[in-house]
Length: 439
Image (cartoon, rainbow, N blue to C red; front, side, top):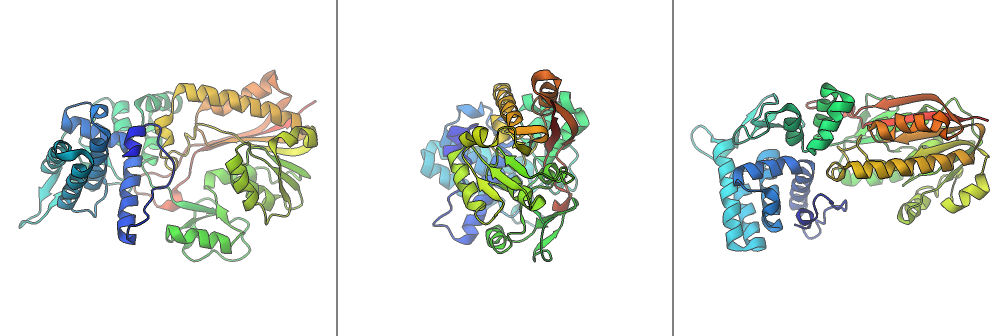
């Protein structure tokens, strides 16, 4: 309910399932993530069935409908009658009798129009197509099926339709259609409906792949196929592997021909790429830093067992490193538009003003990095964005006279993996460019 009140500024805190049985906790998490992943799609359906603006509906009622319709249309192991009854009961407790009646009417309207009685009686079954076709009366599932909705309620215009079917702000999808083209825009939107797998960097592993892991299509990467609550134990036992998407791995990997003595990771976050730097350049001295206090604390703990990594305060870098670094890694703050299958909340927060603010911050960080690197040294600029303003435009600005840098190479990766493909085909979107200090 708190998320319904806060939308689109959703909290990224994990769902609290304390007090629930393992089975109920699993169902609660499945419902919660289904709503977050398809929020705008569910709102579109609610608006059509309720014949009133969704945002005018009180938060407790709206939360009930989002969770209820997610069970009906997105979770195929919840019987329709159970989803309706439990949702109405919850709405009665949260919103009183009038709210529960409204929820009951919308839920039963969906069942009447999108479900069919089984032959010989029994509980209604959800209508679906074996393969999603993109028509106005269906929504896509990650496995490639198309779930039927009550009527042709999705927009007729192609861009607006794919935005509603895949739960993206229409203005963002129109932007992608212009910058990527219609085909790649559609593919990115469908990719973002997938449940992102846990991908591991196993390029530097010292023994065989752990159990429950299988190779990813990207060399040096593997997919973890075990229970989520067992992954932490695995990573504790195997410090030679860590969670890192296949696209993220490529930036540091592209620098393997460099032999740096001093490396600086200016925006280290929780240390994913710092681990990769430490493994790729075991003889280098690596200074890692992050301006966020909480992330810096996590970073210190994560790097405690990495003898060639020292975590330092950002304020100390200009004095201690100025003009001496051989390689500076910049994993800069960005809109996260290449990782929206993982960052479920980020797509709803996207707006042009945020993009503009982040671009200004990125230029400040680039300028600060340039002051740290020696002549002939390298700056590795990387984002998890697919927006040209955050990627090539920033490099052109830096190398066009704003900073004493020149471009050596760059790579842009769109998100990969689509409906019906296995987790080994999944990859986030990213960009990286290697720049050299001149003069």
